Length: 506
Ligand code: NAI
Image (tube, rainbow, N blue to C red; front, side):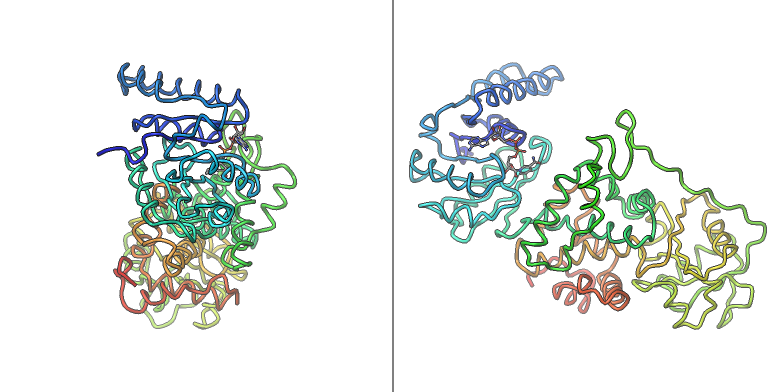
């Protein structure tokens, strides 16, 4: 196939520009790297050349290929040098006025057929295009850092972008070895929008004192399979970047409660405790390694009381089987005996409310999160209410740890940690579909490649059951009275009609 763009200019030779230049030259395009700082161009070319030399050393590129790539990556110090380019990718400072004036200048130099794109992650593509003579030839082309490794690019149509331009950009992305996804011009596009659920809900949970950072990270890694817990991720990205993204998307969506920022990150940012790069974020770092507080040990218990399981428990049959496998003495009466450990497994509700509604003795009531099939998780999570007796808590902890599986005990809140975070992620993803920002397929691709989640958010909803996710959201709304948990109509429709209809036309 012929290259969609054979002559490409990259404006801005920073972290992003050099990565885009690298993959474009690798695809076979002639690339001009332009920057106002001449030394930045040299540094970028040196850095990319070094990458190619390393790949050659590892046998991943032939000497001929490396020579070819190097010959295709040129520097440019005058805008006139770019006059023949068919595509210009802008990756300069994230300021609307500066980007607008750059594109106005570029339009004067380039042929009218040239396609101009911005790598902005937070500005409106339409707002940048408003300064241009030919907004139909302009789009967003949003790469992720580091570009050669993060193999997804969002192709963003502004209000006036021609559809054929987006198609050509998608073809070129594929030729560069990347997967294109198409998005409408909306705050955060796909990836930064879909990513709002994870961190913000975790912050909300920590701000309620439900558990500490390390416990929340452990639970989300072990129960859902996230590679990094939300606080590890905050430390890696650094709050001087992520807090602004959180605020920007929240305000651009006119204070939509789903994206509400949290005072915790504002405070930490103000205090300079921004993450791994400064040696301290949510975790402290010594020689680059996070200092993770040890997990509380499994309590030693002399006598395990008999266990009674609420008839309304989620996945009740599985829970009973699990208790049997763990060797528990299970009570089968319609109500617990006076000495029984009483187990409840709500979706979205807090343990206290469940104990009151089901008329159980709160002192002996412990909750367990059964949203996810026990066999599919590496950790069990128990929750106690303020009245739960210590001996009942410890008995439950020891019982569920009998087979060696990790157990966390958290304080009571609406929903368990995994339930809240999963439901929020699925809900935000559903609303992206509801708003027609992209197709469900592109959403899944963008999130798995751009955020490295263990599965796409819609697949996550399917896996744990849209009706379960909906139940969590409805009950969280009842507990908190907070519109952030209001389910997207897109999710509500799927919860109502079936479990496997995430990928339909609606
Ligand atoms: P950077 O600060 O590493 O590099 C920016 C480069 O642009 C510098 O070399 C600077 O000299 C040059 N520059 C500034 N104004 C210029 C102008 N008027 N004309 C020509 N060159 C100019 O920035 P980075 O991280 O590469 O980001 C660039 C763009 O990419 C921003 O819009 C950013 O929002 C976006 N982006 C950044 C990501 C990241 O993780 N760093 C991810 C996705 C998008």
